Each structure stands twice: as structure tokens, then as C-alpha cells.
Image (cartoon, rainbow, N blue to C red; front, side, top):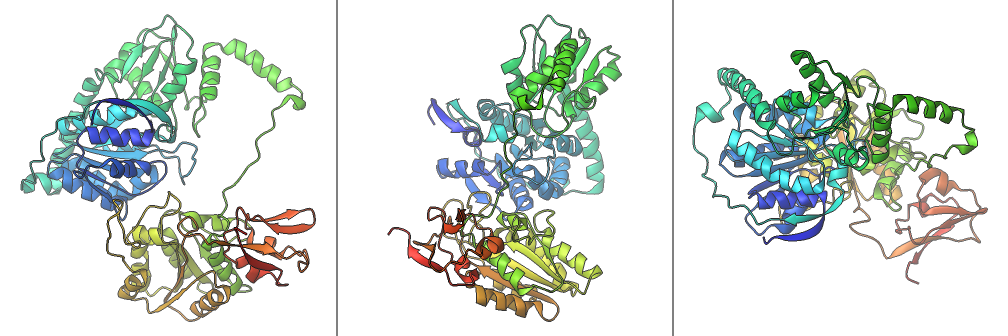
Length: 608
């Protein structure tokens, strides 16, 4: 790969940096904001890299571990909640170690913008005793990923790499250096004392890891991406990750700055050099007060007379993401508290008319023509007047919670709907308990829950919303699509066959866009006991879109607005007293025509 300057997204920069570093295995599970990393590796693969969407993050971690045991440089990608799924093998892997460099990208999502939680991978690094690299920009991420591989290989440990959403999805012009010269993997060398985890071995390895991390703290104090910018003030700023980029934009001249790129093990000696001549320090970081806690511990151990401010003291917010504006305000309050107290008072006394109105809240909704809307509506119609609970899951179909559908009563994490429904039924057996799950999620984390239900003789109705893709994260293939991330034809794994193999005997398959058929299938499945399954099969509109669309016949329409009240499809709009369908949004699913009591909606050719 020749040296050149290119404009790329942060995730592609990470991918290109990993390719340059000689990665030979890349595995992961799609999850925003990390998804595009693996896709970019597949795009730029010259054939030397094994790239796969694994069935879930745990599988990806274990596949990656095997490759690293054989001496190959390995990249495993996921989002922060995916790290929870992968934590079982990772915690043991931290004790076992690796031979080839192994970097685990866990992309954090401050906000959160597209996640269930705001958990902080840096804290997981402390918990697992693994080194953490925290890039502050796409350019730095591209270079740092190579350094993380070298670090991993040198110390024979997995390394966590923590880009956040703004690093992953920002675009930057990067200089791509020549590819590194990496030797071929040695292959797996049998050594049960090293690769087989025994309690005694783990005890000895724990001692070794604690000693290693203490030494790494010294080593990382000299790491070039941890550094001090000198100043002439007695107040300083400490920051890392994307917050460093915001800080550099607004930092007043002469303000000392400490940048932390490896929050664990923490570069203590560098921090001491920074703190010893200062009176006060403000820490700017996203999510957990990780850097702040480390500085407090260091100041206490070293008896440094410096006050540390941040999230723990209420000087910065303790949730959500930072921005250039929020960082500027935090720094101004810190450096000039008296002036800002006056300005805060004036702002409080200002008339309400001077306030800038907040932007309207625009909650996400199911797309116009989404088959999930039809699936939810069919279940709702079939269960009208009956006691039923609807356990949901993570994916596009979580949006079924929005009114007027209001069909998601619980949502915890991927795959949990299947098992939560079982717990609900154990306590409230007179209710019909439905568990909704998507096709991709079924493979990722639903199968175990179904096995649990069959084994324990539970009574639930499993509803698989099969739209032939992993829609929420950008239409990645999965085991049921018959192709891989590289576009190769693969075994198309049948969900009904899996269910039958598990022991589910009553399986109903239908098209949710055929409303009568779908309602009847649900009614039949709701009868009786045991585990029953309804598979609603209809492709995502982004995968397969009809040439037809629907139109309201104004001469027949009674303006009852049943179509709007029942479905909430964004393509159905009002214009004065009239109800119309926006042809630019409509996908011709026809559910609105099935709902209309006056047969006032018909199908037309969109291109007429």
C-alpha cells in the first residue's frame, strides 16, 4: 500500500491502520458505532485476511483468540454493549495472554446516540486488567491501532482500543504510510501450561499481570501519545480521547495541559510531573470519571497539594457526550470562577423571550412500509381484548414501542425478550406471553433462550421478525442470508429447522403483509401451551422495495383517520381535512388498505 493522503471516516481509518499493521484475522458483530471497521477491512482485503461477521461478540472473541494463539495479528470489533457478551472469554483471555498481537475494538457511545447504555470501556479495562488505548481523532486512531498491535505482541496481552462515536464517524484526511513488514504467523505451538486455564495457573498469572501493569505504568509515562503541554498558569487541564480534540480548540494560551491516551495502566509518573507544580486541575472526559479517580489516588499517595475537579465534584456533567461548546464553558468556569458567577446570575435574570428555543424532539420510527409494523399490528389485532404481554428485543423492532402500535412492553438487551417472557409467564401464567426477536438477533443470542423454554416446559409464543438482513446497523449479512461479509455464498441456515431441532413443534410461517393470514396464525399460536413460534417473513424495504405505492381515493375516503390512528405510518399524512399518502415515502406494503374500513386506499404504479 503506497503512501498517500485520503479522506476517510474514522472507522475506515482504523481499518486501514489495522491492515497496514499486518492484521491476518478480523472478526466481529455489527453494532453502531463500530460496524464500518470490519466492512472497510473486507473492502480493502487483498485476500490475505480472514474477515467474518461472527454469530455474536463472544464467538468473535474466541475465534480471534484462536488466531492470536497461532501467532497471527487479530482484530475483534464490537460496540460497548457487545463487550458484555464477549466478557466471558475476554476475562480468561486476560489471564492466558496471546502470542500474536490482539486488539479488541470496543466503540463507546456517549450520549448515548444508538445504544442501551453509556458504559465506559476504560472502566472495563481496569476491571479486566487490560491495557486501554483511547484515540482522540481518526488520524490518531489510524496510527495508534498499529502501536496497539505492537504493544500487544510485545507484552503478549490482548489490548482494548476505545474509539467513541465522534471518532468513529468523523471524517479526516489521513496520510497512509507504507505497510509494515510482518513475519508470517508461526502457527499454534502446543503448551498446556500456557493455553489451558487452570486455577493454579490463573493465580500465578494474576500475580504476573499485577507486576506487569505496574511496570507498564512507567513505560506508558514515556509513550509519545501521553504528553504535557507546558503553561504558565497554576491551573491545569487533564483530558483524553475526543475531549482532547475539543479542548485544543478552546484552550486559553498558557494553560498547562496533560493528554492521557492510555487510561489503563495509567501513566503515573507523567501525571506526577504535571500535578506537582499546580494548585488546581480540571479533568475533561466522557462517561466515567476514570482519569479523575486516578489523579485523586495519585495525589493522595504522593501527598501532592493539588485540588482535582471534574465529574465527582460537579464541575463537569456526569452523563452524555462533551462538545466544543461544553468544554469551553467548563474551562471558562474553572479558570475564571468569579466572572462566570456574575454571568450566570445575569443569565438567570434574563427575560424568557431571550431564551433560545429547544429543538423539537424527533423520536425514531419504523420506516414507511416496514414489515415489522404489519407484524406488530397483526399480533395486536389478534390479541385485542386478551391479557397479553409483549417482550421486545434490540433492533429496528424496538421501535414497535411507539404509539399507536405500543407493542413493546419490555426491552433489556439482545436475546433477553425470549427469556424475560419465560420469567413473566412463571409468575403470571394467565397471560399470553409473546417474545419478539429479529432474524439476526435470533442467531446471535436467541437460540439459547428457546432451548431454555423448551427444556423447562415454558409457555411462550416466540415471534421471529425475519426481514432477511441485519437492518438496524446497516444491512449486514447473517447466517440466515446465505452469504458472508466477503460476498461468498454460504450455507443458508433455516430458522424453522433450528426450532424443530430444538423441539418446537408448532411453527407458523406467514407473510405479515397478508394481514388476515397473519392474524389467523397468531390467534392459532396463542391457543394451547408449550413453546409455539410464529415466523413473519418479509424483506426489509431497503433490501427489496416494490414498484407500487398506495393512494387514498378521495371520493371514497370518509376522513375517519383510522389508518393514521391504527398504524402511524410516516407515509400517511393529513392535508387540511384530507388524508393523503406521500408517494415518495410509500413502499406499497398495502397494510393501510387492509386497515381502511371503507376500501378507500388502493395500489398504483409509483412511476405513473
